[in-house]
Image (cartoon, rainbow over all chains, first blue to last red; front, side):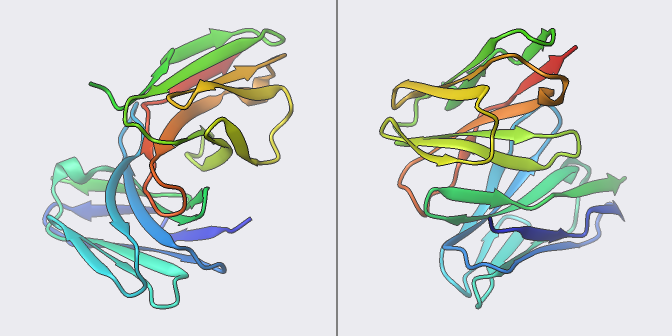
Amino acid sequence: GQQLNQSPQSMFIQEGEDVSMNCTSSSIFNTWLWYKQEPGEGPVLLIALYKAGELTSNGRLTAQFGITRKDSFLNISASIPSDVGIYFCAGRVNNDMRFGAGTRLTVKP
Amino acid sequence: DTAVSQTPKYLVTQMGNDKSIKCEQNLGHDTMYWYKQDSKKFLKIMFSYNNKELIINETVPNRFSPKSPDKAHLNLHINSLELGDSAVYFCASSQVAGYSPLHFGNGTRLTVT
């Protein structure tokens, strides 16, 4: 099946810094999504992207659906301590949705 | 008013036992899923159901069997549990097939001793 390569695996940043993570695939997806998971909870949807080239923001978060439909990135601006968690990219085609391995974000106050 | 709820949250059992995890969604979605998250946090799809029809069945041992009594429920039954089955299992649902995001439950942490 389609594999998603997500990077970086982990990030340790200072509060206030900007963060960037990305996801690439050898396959085309119809939808790219970004989720955040906190301990003891399920992944929570942050941003959904439906069209190639689409750039969407949600507060301090911005994500883009790559033109080739094989990649996406997520940026977080002015990070705060509550941004801590694991961020997952996901690509969807029909009823199949695949996840990246996650980016573990640590924010130091 | 929980959207996707699964029970139990924690399940500790011995090898060889049979157990079930229940999932219910009140979002009116027509597709439900089961994912397995391993100790490295990797999420892998196990099954999806659309209108009571199994759509995806990845290379999952046949000891795992999804059961959907109606489109709001997708339960996961596991026979003859093994140590390697220890993981967090997530139920999810989505609306229209193909494009809609998945909404996840809070997971069931299964520990097999």
